[in-house]
Length: 214
Image (tube, rainbow, N blue to C red):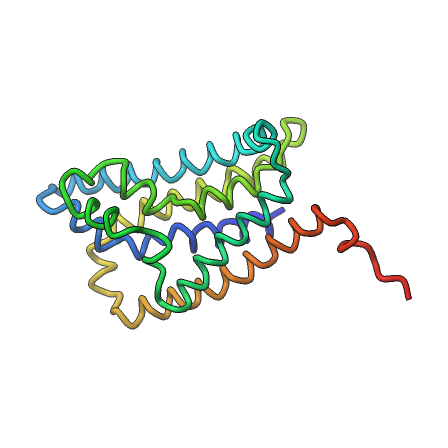
């Protein structure tokens, strides 16, 4: 269970990627006092937690209502996550994580709220897809519920801390260091995405999971 929590947390953190949103956060908080900046960082962390937890908790019921199998959602979510991972490795993550309009709105006063910094710049389609694909839980199995709830909470807290210390981080992280971090996160995320798709394909096509009989 700990391995699953760790893997999901790493994947979500790579998808949310708060480090990449630091410049927009600093632009959005120009003129804010230190107290207001800390409050805004806490607010964005809570947005991440609430949005991802809702996706994880309501995902199973939503998939059933839409007659979508969990295997299909895992394959679809894996494809979206893989696209983000490839874009991160190639240095084109902005093309899949935010549109020019969303980025421009985040720099304006009108963008200093829930949208677009919280959603979709931090919690976008890839993050929602990932949580929906891992929404298989039951009240009768509280331990499995922990694997759904804990990763978003950890990631939300890390988002909060990242923005709370955004000024210091930006001063210490050079553009070259940011590139290295993004590339490594992209490689890790690509592996997780392929594994997610493989699990979904095995659910859709059980024969793929059957041992080969010589």
